[in-house]
Structures are given as C-alpha cells and as structure tokens.
Image (cartoon, rainbow, N blue to C red; front, side, top):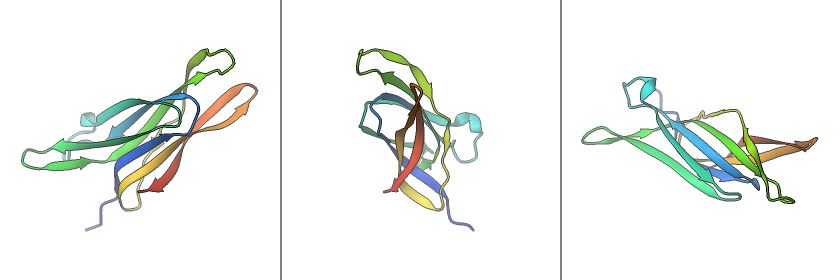
Length: 128
C-alpha cells in the first residue's frame, strides 16, 4: 500500500497591498462523489494570513478533508485616490503533495506591474 499524499491544512499569506478573497476547495468524504467537496471562502486583508482546515464527520470518527485547490481574487486599492478597481482573478492553484503534509503555506503575491496593470499569482511557501 502506498503512503498517503495530501495536504491537511493550508495557511494563505496575503503578501500584497490589496484585499484578497480566497477560496479553498477540500476533498469529498472517502467513498463519496466529487459533488460533496467542502468549500471555504474568506477575505484576507493586506499582509495578513488565514488558516484553512476541514474535516468530515464520519459518525464515530473524523476524516481529514485534504486541500485540493486554492483560488483568489483581489480588490485593488489605489493609494493616490483611495478608489478600488474591480476584482482581479488569478488562475486556480491545484494542490499536490509529495507525502503527508500537516500544513502548507501558500503566498499571494503581486507579480509585476505592466502598463498600469497588476498581475497576481499564488506561490508555494513553506511546509509547516
């Protein structure tokens, strides 16, 4: 039997100067369809972090709901005018593990500014 390969919990660090709306998708209960996935969505302020962890109630025991996918969208705050621009959404980050990981950090970063446009991405951080 192969050892398990999944992430039990995620810490998402917002390393930008913008508000992030983060969505984390967790795996379904053992033996159930993909339609039973758990989803948690939280707002993370600039330079703050949030932890995401879910479990499935199996009656007399609980099962870890592995982290499968992380996505984020940003409300850009323009410092000069204090105005906000519409959400900038980044591609989903599919979570893969090389073993059993208790907590994995994911960093939201601003990639670059090009012709007045901001680009964001999710970067793998430390295993905790």
